[in-house]
Image (cartoon, rainbow over the protein chains, first blue to last red):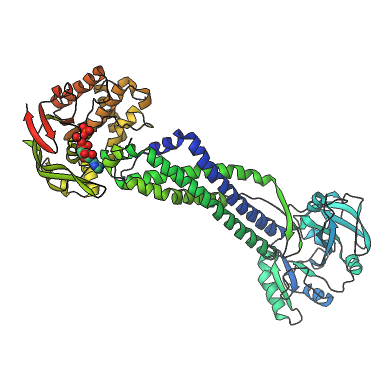
Amino acid sequence: MRLLPNVPVSYVFRNIWTRKLTTALTAGGMALVVFVFAAVLMLDAGLKKTAVSTGSAENAILLRQSAQTEIQSGVSRDQASLIETLPGVARGNGGEPQVTKETVVLTAQNKRGTTKPANLVVRGMPQLGLAIRPQVKIVDGRLFKPGSSEIVVGLGVVNAFDGVAIGQSLRFAGREWTIVGHFDAKKSGYDSEVWGDVEQMMQAFRRTAYSSVIAHLEDAGRFETFKAAIAADQRLALDVKQEPAFYEEQTKALSGFLFWLGLALSIIFSVGAMIGAMITMYASVANRTREIGTLRALGFRRRSILVAFLLESMLLALLGGLVGLFFASFLQVFTITTMNFTAFSQLAFGFDLTARIVLNTLIFAAVMGFVGGFLPSVQASRLEIVDSLRAA
Amino acid sequence: MNLVEIAHLTKSYRRGGQVVPVLMDLSLEIPQGDFLGLMGPSGSGKSTLLNLIAGIDKPDSGTLLVGGEDITKLGEADLADWRASNVGFIFQFYNLMPVLSAFENVELPLLLTSLTKRDRRERVETALELVGLADRMEHYPNELSGGQQQRVAIARAFITDPAIIVADEPTGDLDRKSAEEILGLMRRLNSELGKTIVMVTHDPHAVGSAKHVTHLEKGELVRSQT
Ligand SMILES: Nc1ncnc2c1ncn2[C@@H]1O[C@H](COP(=O)(O)OP(=O)(O)OP(=O)(O)O)[C@@H](O)[C@H]1O
Ligand SMILES: [Mg+2]
């Protein structure tokens, strides 16, 4: 059944195809906007992916109440010991609780090729810290020895900083720390960290309390039990979150910033692209006035003309959208290293093109086509037949 | 029986603030199966009258019955549907869609019917054969001569089997030989398929194909001849 007797789609398609130069220019403008739009969404998605993959749902992270980040947090040794006794905490073969007490400190180091120092996250942990983070693997060298001034650095650090080869050393907290290994944290936030023995670090940084405690749970489903036990104990004035939720919150500010930046850029650019589409479509209507009159004389209704021109404009925009997406997909090879201003640390993340972004981007393109083509299409449908047949 | 019955038809255009009367109290009857030639000096209102009969323009007053139906009473959308099934158009400059092939151009009016794709194909092929362009179906208008384009337009005009075919100077842009082919086809549409045709023309040679000729001067019919 046909809802509306419409001008054949081939007519619409071929008119776009015939005007190659105008089509290329108009679609090119659209492609540019779509590229920016998709890039920002991809960046945001990459950021989220990094944040979420930094953590595991089986790990519960405990911070001092209302501390936003590990840097601001403090967990006393007594509190840390209490946590080991709580229900839901996984135990090792010897019955030892799978809890890692960690200290997180910022230190400034020079980035490669600059003399400007950038923040580097230094994390002290027991050796168990590596075991409860299965996504992290030592890819070069070995893990630090307990009780030593040895450290391992993430690949993100290796790529961005000088002097971090195995055998070299970093100087912070008044000590030289020898690098004995590199680890790959699969592009998670840990990739931008330096890890060493927790007790050594606490001495060097003159700390008496841990920054955070991570309890590895028997399984993710035990989290609520564990959380309830913490709430029930007056001595544990701590916030507890599953790691993925925690790390996603860490990037909220940056993500929000990206979102608004992307939105602002896309809106400004899209106005240009829509005006471009509008000019193209007005020209298209003007050039085909006699065709429009003929179609109407043959019995096509005003509505069919409106739909045909709207479709033309939207297809043009979708074409631009596909081109823009095509180029945006190459962004996935790049990695962005930036300051995460919630955690005050370096954060490396990539562009991630998801199916959802493809869909949203194409919808965005189609909407631009619709808006840009609206007035010209209305004009085309309002033409009087006899007037348009008289047109040259 | 009259296919078209026009009574007291008036039509004027507004140009600037001025009202320009084009047709004044015009009455005319066109019998079923007629081939009417409409002549007259430039600006006399021939095209205006033809457009009114074809339902692409609206009169100011008067009645205009085609096949017993007063088309002046039809609304915009109904009139479009009425044209789709009742009128075939032949224009001076052919007015084919440049991006569509000869086949697709002829098929265009059939898209407004409920015919299946296969039925449409069959009809289009028959029509193009009738105008002698069976071997040019996949050609685009810019690959055809003026005369060939006008033959495609003729196929498009009768493809829906309309009650009436209107032609505004159908040979105006053609050389002698092509014009003769076109007129021959129109005579066949009239005699073999029984189509009622109204043709506006300046060309005294072309008007020879018509069964009747009517002269229009300053918006009024001055004389008719057979
Ligand atoms: N859409 C319009 N707006 C204003 N004036 C018009 C319009 N259509 C026709 N006219 C005027 O109406 C008069 C009759 O025009 P029409 O086209 O019917 O003449 P015609 O007999 O077909 O002339 P020709 O032989 O040159 O084609 C002319 O003065 C013309 O300028
Ligand atoms: Mg005329």
